[in-house]
Image (cartoon, rainbow, N blue to C red; front, top):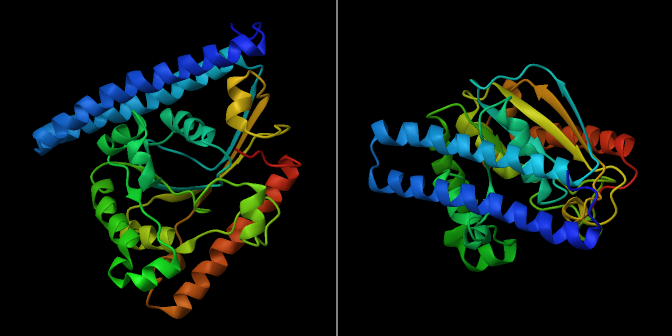
Length: 301
């Protein structure tokens, strides 16, 4: 138990322990990723993938154990529906902090297949994390503004093509595909700039998740509508956690059916696009109301 330490000692100690955890598992995952690269045969790739998926979950579990040792914290998880490690899931969480990734990875460890996050292209350069994610076959997405695409039309649909390529890899073994539908972490500034119609969420971006459903819809067993809240946390949830001041993590998971009406051609069928946006906006409205009930103010980081 390290909670007795004063914050000025606890923060650097906890940070070092978390970095060691990331580095240890990151190096191992990268090494086995190189083995996959050098020996791209199914007899090698399949067991290596199972091993590095286990390592990813081990990272999440150890990280949360460190959080429990350094914070007087309660984990409040509620799942509406049944989960299995032998199925395929599309997870749609809200995004408040980098801590979300640790929480979702630990949650997945004993309940569902190892998670695959859609990551920003810039994260490939993050030490241990970037190459580790590459070894785990996580897709790196590069987002272009409408103005940039207008000047460079050959880049139109690049994110969708990347999604398509990785969806093919995800078909090979049970997988949890995690898409932060808001596109980035919630902050008050982003909320204002995007003129969000929601109180606690950024507007959802429908294109990527619609394409993932079109590419893998027949494979997904369910959609996991996940809501993350760090109640009573002021400012950064990550900094609060490192300083021993994170008191509660709330996770609400709704297991939704993959309805036939949400699988279709989002980019060419205008009526389907309207219907899909309506469905996603309804999911987001319910999530927004749930967050309002769980916490007066979402944390920022």
